Amino acid sequence: MPGPLQEISIFLISTLLSLYVIALMLRMLLAMVRADFYNPVSQFLVTVTNPPVRALRRVIPPIGRLDTAVVLLMIALKMLELWLVAWIGGASPGLGLVLVVAVFRLLQLLIYVFMFSIIIEAVMSWFMAGGMRGNPVASLVASLNRPILTPIRSVMPNLGPVDLSPLVAIIGLNILLILLRSIF
Image (tube, rainbow, N blue to C red; front, side):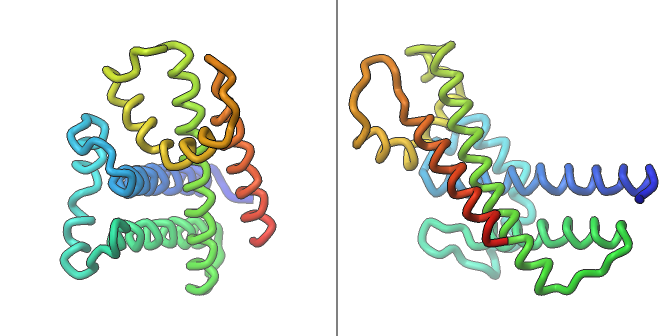
């Protein structure tokens, strides 16, 4: 059983690296959906993540709208997190295992990011009906969710003021999460 110092170290490493990976993931996703670059939240994400991304972009070009420098940085940071946590716990996993686990954890994180953004958009729509345009978070969340919710809305029957597409999307994302967990 790990001691308190080990637990604190693991907690801090996991939390700090995970928060930075989430910032990188949001930056990548918002760029892919062409969200408002001048939005204050977008500017914050770019400012926080720009130093390592700019350095990597010099040697790693993007592929279409996919920022491969950001993807590789996320994988590297997740691998570092997993390796440090294992090392603190007294294990030394192989590089291949750490890479596979890192990719699966990033895919899980991607699903969670979409689930939480859909929940945020749904809750904000209840409290800010019609007034979401002025909120920087609301406009980014709507941009982020548009590729998932628009196809669902196109096949869902119109129920007036009730939009069930977020519920359908979250159910679908949960199914994806279950399938992903069953693989690994």
